[in-house]
Image (tube, rainbow, N blue to C red; front, side):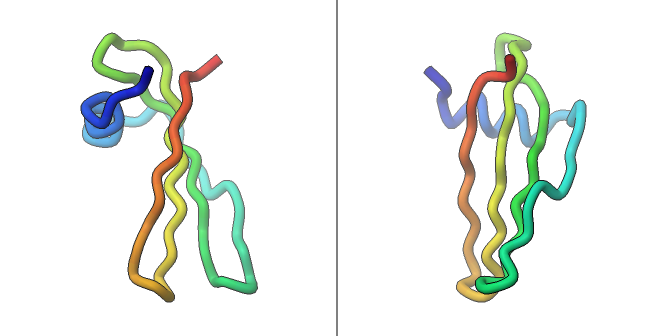
Length: 65
């Protein structure tokens, strides 16, 4: 199970990789794939979807294979 502490730790540390993963032209939204690690130093993928139109963002996570 991934906790909010794992996500925050992964976002605060130096990332292994970060790239723009997808752009939705209809909604003018970018998704970024961040590869990092959790509190136990296990690989973690965090996808951040930016939604400037609605001034919000969404975070989706999973353990890195």
